[in-house]
Length: 288
View: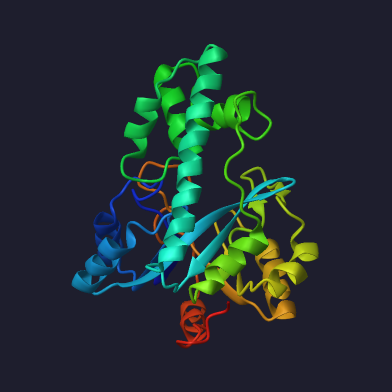
């Protein structure tokens, strides 16, 4: 029986459920702990932690930072961090503001290409959360000019698409250091992209990049993830052992009706959470 899910999203970024709703769903499923990892935002954590206390569910405060590499984009998770730190929040604000400007530029490009969507509608879809390309994709779907979000990304707003726009940049190493400065544990999110077809992509060469990331403070690898085969999981476990890294995992749940795994839909050994909490730096041990 799966008891934990260390990768969940809420309406604070691009999830479909509020922090309270997410926690209530986890409680109804019998999960013991979840980590709320919204994109470039911790705005849902206070609510999630309060809901967790009320429901008897442990909520791990986390964030998912979007990073740029030559081959595309990858994500860095940060667990157990002092998210109220003012400098940290200022950097998150900078990243979110970059998302807004990027979305506005994408809307302008799409309109010029003959796909007229409203930035106001993109904002409405994002709600109080951080605007992202999924919201632009959903606005495109609503115009019926594309059939689904996948087509929107593939044809228009993916990295090689005609309406793609770069955003505020953050390197994976800088993300590690940013998380460490607030006492958090940086974890390389879904290092591989495992497609349903069985094809495996690497946004950044994993094995070659790990020494540099470890030097920057990397603490773990996300090993258990949707579509990861036993062979891929074993490969990541070997890398984690080789570099002395923690192991985490989760569903990357964005909401009922969204593509991807269900909440709690990826088995993650409970020992992963135990090791994660044991590795938290003691007060005063944060890196500069």
